[in-house]
Length: 160
Image (cartoon, rainbow, N blue to C red; front, top):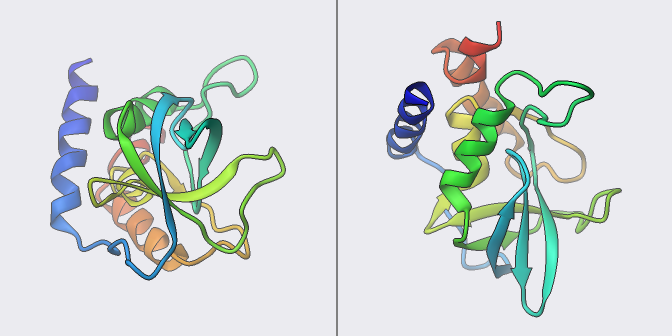
């Protein structure tokens, strides 16, 4: 648990160290409340009068339900996501496609101006996963992944 707390503390420090894309007032957003964190890159939100599952665009975290055992660093990625968004009001920003094949909303997620997708990348909790046509921040995510690998941070140090 001490290692997890240290990683989460470092995650919060890293977001101030690197510039991140700001939430532009010209991009349509919706506000929702996170009611459940499903894993490192998926949450359930209360959006208006309905519940929706939201899959974070452009990133992929280790799966906690991968066959018989969780993938390396899955619980840490889920915990980092929970620390950032659980029971919080978030802004959801769409890209080109609205939903994936599982009918989840595809969104970039912000909480109090912090770009959650990027924070998970920065902390080494996720890998870049650009899926066309939703690639607005793909190069930024690749840059963050490269830095996390080089340090190494998160899964890049724990899952060798």
